[in-house]
Amino acid sequence: MIYVFPTETVYGIGASVWDKEAIKRIFKIKGRPADNPLIVHISRIEHLEEIAWEVPEVAWKLIERYWPGPLTLVLKKHPALPYEVTGGRDTVAVRMPAHPVALLLIEKEGPIAAPSANLSGRPSITTYEHAVEELGDKVDVILKGKTTQGIESTVISLVGRPRLLRPGPITYEELKELLPELVVAKSKEAEAPGMKYPHYQPTHKLYLLTRPDGDFPEVKGAIWRKDIPLPRKLEKVFYYQNERELAQNLYYWIRELDKIGDMVVLGVPEKGLGFSIMNRLKKAAHAILQ
Ligand code: AMP
Ligand code: MG
Image (cartoon, rainbow, N blue to C red; front, side, top):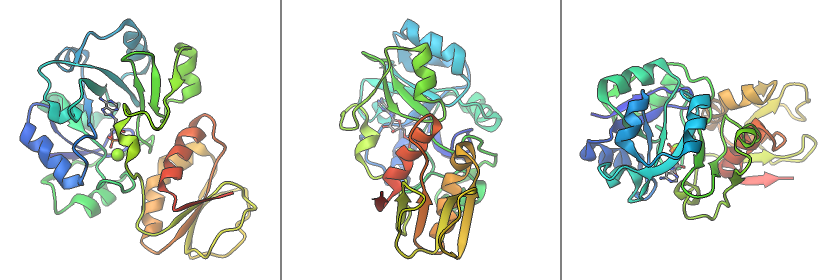
């Protein structure tokens, strides 16, 4: 059985880690390359023993502080865990989501392997309405619930030297306090398989503007900072007051603007949550305008 379900980050499309056929169907539905592994979602610490192998001391420190929550840990894979889940790797990404609907589902089904619920390469999904638009004719069950963070989990690898593979709601700066040896992985690193594929892209062009006074081509819509005047009148504009609000609504706004045409997004400084948001926007962008 395949479920589309809300988490506190974005909507996921998942199935039991033991149901290899369903896992293969998830890759097919999304059009996801088979070597791009899924995140295993658990609801209790005992699940970790079925999924991971030789969990290091440093993992427990992070688990205690951040689970349930938007932190994914890459660990050595349990020998019994199907390779379909890990894209053929000997490592596995795992997290415990902080969302009552996701946790209920996992309590019923056991550990669930789930990537984001968007079709491969497209922006993630953060509302029930968009989940139905994207997957309504492809899956049997879409569960309803509110996402709060709005961007995908922070991913760190703890196999070898701790490395940040994907920035997310829990910031690099914050993690570095608990884990001073943490470094940002190079995007070329083969160990961050998701990074080599197109990501988060709308159908229309998204222009990422890095300066509020910069010029941009003709567009229909914008995502813009509330206290900065927008230089032109556009058909539809979504305003954010701060980074938190931008992260929470980012994918909803991009998908809504994509319904009318090209868009411009005014970026944010690349620190804290802003670093995670810009990581998504740079990949979503048709062009980055300085
Ligand atoms: P998604 O759920 O669509 O955001 O995709 C899951 C993310 O976790 C992708 O960026 C994957 O590359 C990453 N991931 C999952 N498993 C592993 C793993 N074993 N090693 C490194 N990255 C992983
Ligand atoms: Mg994804």
